[in-house]
Amino acid sequence: MRIQLLPDQLISQIAAGEVVERPASALKELLENSLDADSTDIQVSLVQGGVKQLRVADNGAGIAQDDLAMALTRHATSKIASLEDLEAVASLGFRGEALASIASVSRTQISSRYAQAKHAWSIASEGGEITPLEPAALDAGTIIEVNDLYFNTPARRKFLKTEGTEFGHCEAAFERVALSRPDVAFMLQHNGRALSRYAISTPEKRFGEVLGSEFSSETISVDESAAGLRLWGVAAKPTFNRNKSDTQYVYVNGRFVRDKLISHAIRQAYQDVLHHDRHPAYVLFIELDPTLVDVNVHPSKTEVRFRDGQAIHRFIFHSLHKALATPTAISSGATANQAAFNPFGSANLVRPESIDKLRTGLVEGYPTYQSQINLSANEPNSFYQTLFGGHKNSAQNYSNSQSINTALQTNRDESAGDASFAQSFSENHAENDFPLGFAVAQIHGVYVLAQNVQGLVVVDMHAAHERIMYEQLKNALDTKTVAMQPLLLPVSFNADRLEVATVQEELSSGQGSLQQLGFDIAILSPTTLAVRAVPSMLQDVDAVTLARDVLRDLREFGASRALTERRNELLGTMACHAAVRANRSLTIPEMNALLRDMEATERSGQCNHGRPTWFQVSMSDLDKMFMRGK
Image (cartoon, rainbow, N blue to C red; front, side):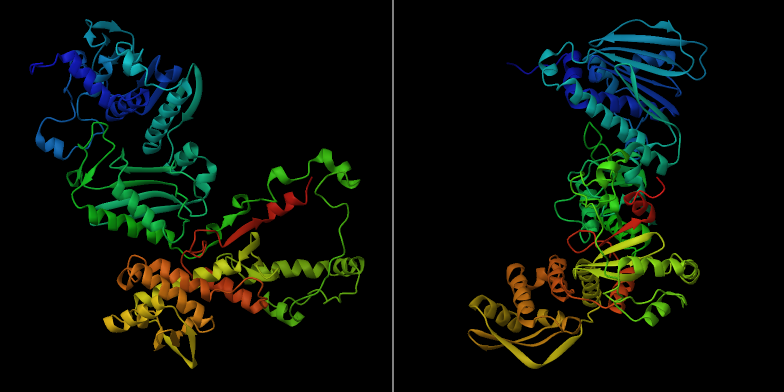
C-alpha cells in the first residue's frame, strides 16, 4: 500500500482510542471542561455505566454561539494560543481534541448559553457529522450528552466490560474530580437513581464525604512550603493502611496525576512505619510554578514531568516524613475498632434479646458466672498515692484469701474516696501532659495496661520498646555518637568462614563500619571471633547473637550499602535485640518509663515493621462492652 493521508474521520477515531479509552475517560474530560468554565455546580447522569448515555450539566461560563461548531473540531481550544501558554498551562484541558474525539465515536449533543448571550444554542454530532445550530432552552451553563458510545466502531465496543465495571470506573473518575474541588458542588446519578451529592464544603469535610468518616478520623494534616513549592492535604496514619493502593490521590496544580517519582517519595516517607505489603492512604496537593512542570506528556494528562525531579522528591519526602514523625499523642494510636479482633465492636456485643439466654448459660462463648477476682496490688499503697496526685483515700491492699463480696463492700464504703481520686487525677494531670496515662498492670508479660483521660491504653511493650531503641540508634548513627561499651571479658565464639572473612574485610578496608555501629570484633583464629565491645545502649543483649546478625547484614549488602540504603534494616535488627522481651515482668515504674519514652519518641505509634504499638479503648467502648446505660 502506498503512503496516503488519512481521512479526518479516521484520524479522529484513532485519537479517540487514546483519549476515550472507556466511558470514564470521556467523563473525566467533560468534568475538566466544566471546571475550566468556572462552574460551581456540576451534575452527572449515567445510563448503563455511561455506555448508553453520559450527561454532564454545569452552570459555568458557557460556549458562545459562534464557537459551538468549532468546539467539535480537532485541535480547537480556548485554553492556549502559543508555545508560551503551553509551557505555563494552568487549565485542566488544553489539547483541544477531547470533544472532537468523543463526538467521532458517539452521538453527541451540546447545549450551551454563553454568559452574555440572550439565548441558548444547541449543536449535535453523529459519528463526527455535525448538524446545524438550533435554538435551545437553557438558563445558564452547558449540557453535554454523549449517547451510544462506540456505536460506529463495534470492534472497540467489544472491549468494554460489564455495566457494573464501567460504572465503577466512572464513579472513581467522578470522585477524583470531586476530591480536588471542594468549592464546587457535585451530583452523580446512575440509571435515574441519585447516588452521590456533595455540597460546597471545606477540604476536610469533602475528604470525609468521599472517602468515609473512618478515613477522615485517622488522618494527619500536611501543609509545608519551601522554595516556591507547597504540599498540603491529609495523609492517613500508618495504622490506617490498605491492602491495595486504591486510596491514594495526588494532584499537581489541581490535576490528578499518577507519577512514579511522587509515589516513591511518599512510600519512602512511610517506610519506617508501614509494613512492606501494606499501602498508605492520602489526599495530597502539590502546588508549584506551572513552568516547572510539563503536563503535555500523555493524551490522558495523568502523567507529568518535573523540571527538577530530585528537588520535588526531596521536598515531598521531607514534608511527609516530618508530619509522620510527630511524637505520640492521644490521636496517633490505633483505636479498638482498628484491632484485628475488636471485642468492643457491635458484632461482638450480646444483644438484648440474648440476655435471658445469657443468664441461663445458653449463649455460646460467654461464661454463666464471674469467677472470684484476686484483688492485690503490685506496689505499696504509698506508691499509688504519690503517682496519682496524693490520693488520700486509696483502697486497702486486700489479701488473696479475701472474697470478692468483702472487697466490693469495702470499696462501696470508700466511694467518696474514689470520686476524690478521679477529681485529683484530672486536676493534677492535664490531658496533653501524659497522653498515654499511667500504667496499672501487665498481662502475661506481653501487654501493658494504662489509664489515660480517654480510658484504657493497651501497649505491646516489645514493639514499643523496639521502636524507641530503633529511633535512638538512628539518631546516634546520624550524629556519629554511637557510644561503645567495652566488655570486661571479651566473648569469643565459633564463626564460619564467611563471618571471619566479613570481619577481616572490614578491618582491612579502613572504613570503620563496625566501629560506627559501636562494635569491636577481633579475629582470634580462622574459626573464632571475639566481641570486645558493643553499643552501650545494647550492652545487656546477647553479644554473640547480635554480632552474628550484624555481620550477616554487612556480608549480604556490603558495608557501604548497609550504612546507607540498607541502614534502616540493619538498625532494625539491632533494635529488635535490644527491645524488652515478651514474658518479662516489669515493675510499675518501668512501665511508666516506657510510656514516657513512647510519648517523646517519633513514630512510636508503630513498630519498625509497621504494626501498631498501642491502641486506645475509650470509656464509651468499655460501657458498650458491659452494656452500661441500657
